[in-house]
Image (tube, helix red, strand yellow):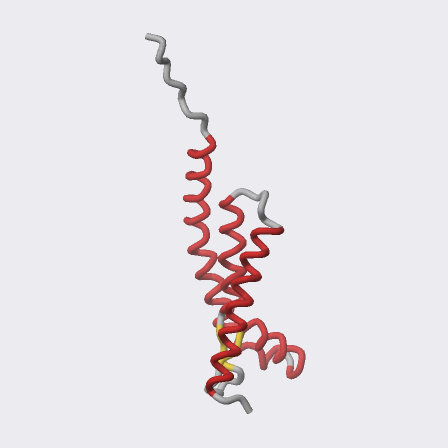
Length: 124
């Protein structure tokens, strides 16, 4: 069985690996995409990777919800995974709701940055 220190260490390692995966995904696959689309993809992906869920409905320990859903679904069926799907769906939905206005803001900022600057006529 895990001690409290190893449990916390494992959660930190997983969280850092998930953040690193998001950064690398943006750097390698989305580097040429506009900023608004990267925001729209990255925030929900981060929510999917970082949402915690109880291992079992009566348990006191958490694990990443994506892993809990996968193991529960594959080992015990869809009904066993429902308790982990709820927080996963909730936080992914919240991330989508937050990503939409941020994506609009990023698109406006990128459009403003891409506009040519007016040239000053210093000849007069």
